[in-house]
Amino acid sequence: MIAAQALTDMAPGFADLALDAQRTFRRLMDSMAKPGRVTDLDVLVSPPVPGFEAAGAIALALLDFETPVWFPDDADGRRLANWVRFHCGCPVTTDPAAAAFALAGPHNVPQIDHFNAGDAKYPERSTTLLIVCPALVGGAAIDLTGPGIAEPLSIAPAGLSAAFWGAVAQDRARFQLGVDLVLTCGTQIVGLPRSTRISPSSAKGK
View 1 (cartoon, one colour):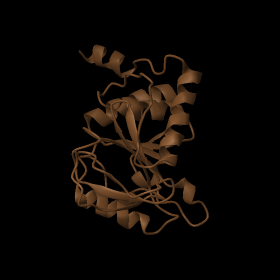
View 2 (cartoon, rainbow, N blue to C red):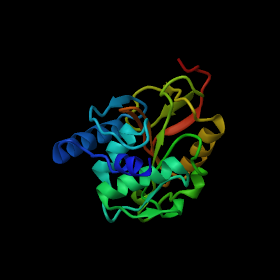
View 3 (cartoon, rainbow, N blue to C red):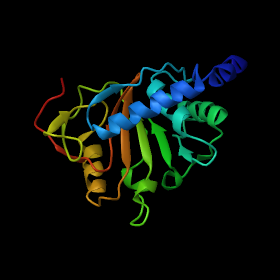
View 4 (cartoon, rainbow, N blue to C red):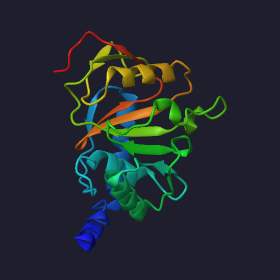
C-alpha cells in the first residue's frame, strides 16, 4: 500500500511539458486580466489528491527551484508537496509569509494576513494563493470591482465564508499590497488579483 501510494504521488505531470505549461500560463494570465470570470485551463494533469487538477497544473507551469511554496501540514498537503517538489524542484516552506505560492483547500487556509502582502518597493512579491473549492458557485456571494471588470460582477464560490472574504477585503485595503488569489475547481479557475476590490453582496450563489 505504501509503495503504491508513493508511485501515485510521483505520477506524471504534463503530457507535453512545453506546450502544456505555455497554455496554462496564458490562460492563467487571461484569468487574472478578467477577474471573476471562469476560465478552463484545458490541460489534464493527475495530482495525487483529486480536485487539485487546476492548482496542480498552475504549480507545474510556474514553480521552480527558486519558488518557495506552502502546503497545509496534513496528509493531502504532504502528498501534494511531494508531487510538486518531484516535478518542479521547488523548496517547500512551513512559513506562509515566506511563500511565493501556496496551495490549499478552503478549510485549511491560514489567515490571509499570515501570507506575504509584498512591500512598497516590490508589491509583486506578494504570495499567490491557490484555493481549491468544491464548486465555483453556491457559496457566499461577493461583488467584484476594479481593473478588468467593466461592470460590477458577483461570484459565489463554495466553501469560502463571509469572514474569509472580509479578511481578503481588509488585506486589499492596502493596495498595491495584498495577496493574489486564484480559485480553482477541477480544471477551472477564477482569478482575483490584489487589484480587485471585494465587498459583500446580496446576490445568492446559483
